[in-house]
Image (cartoon, rainbow, N blue to C red; front, side):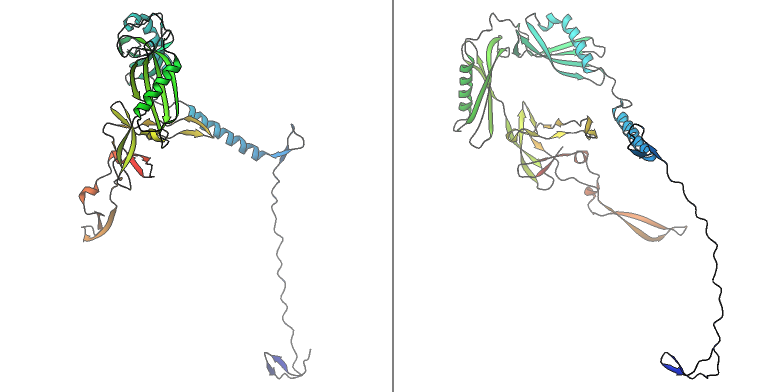
Length: 389
């Protein structure tokens, strides 16, 4: 092949003789690669559902479903299984049966007669197996005020003793009241208004109940009337009035709602006021002016719930106090420690580390107290959080 004229490469003309032949490019053989062997994986078998011919499912999905079901069943069985070392004391039903047998043999000592009945109010089992059953008493199906008693049993169920509110014999010739129920309700309403002089009470309701009063002298027939209402601010007021069912004379009366203002050392806002309830000589962390909202001790436990089903509930024991002063204030924590390298060298040539507290005061370097680490919290009307011991 012969080229005539100049050859232009990148804007330059290179003279080429017409007699200079252009040699063809050397032939380079195309590389030949042998075909690679492809591994074809077998397709996962698909089974037909004989029960439903129109549907198909994969074996692996069926095994996965079975595994989930097995795991769920195992979890439920573990939750429901009795815990190792659980309390092996007598059950409530066993304690009640033991106490019922004692009542049969100790009826005369407890002042029980054929006209009286009993009902279980509470059962307590001590750590050593001792048993205590509190009973309420009735006379001809009427509640007896002051008729409750407690039976104490040994761990084997034998009789140990009893405590009674009254030892007077309960016997009435007649249980027909001379004072009607509406009249008793009117007397109780008047007593509530007299106890809240200057207040315009509204929504006042009274519910009288015929009882046997064994608290004030010889047992007698009486009306126990619970009367409730609201003051001008909408706060609830309540009073229980005990009226002689024959003479109409007031025997006794007491406030059903007793509130007291205490104080609590809050986490963030210092000492704040707290509404509590006085029960006997003990203050309860319960606000009767706001729906009886209370703060309880969960004993470091939580509810055990699986798939929306709860197998156990955490306790909520009402906090009580003797002086109506609550809380321990801000939670104290141990200071953060800072590690620094010492420039001194040991004999082996290794560096040593020393730890220094981040705070200078040794008093703040103590670990948090037990009362702080186990404190519960409540909320005041103003939204302040208060720690409760």
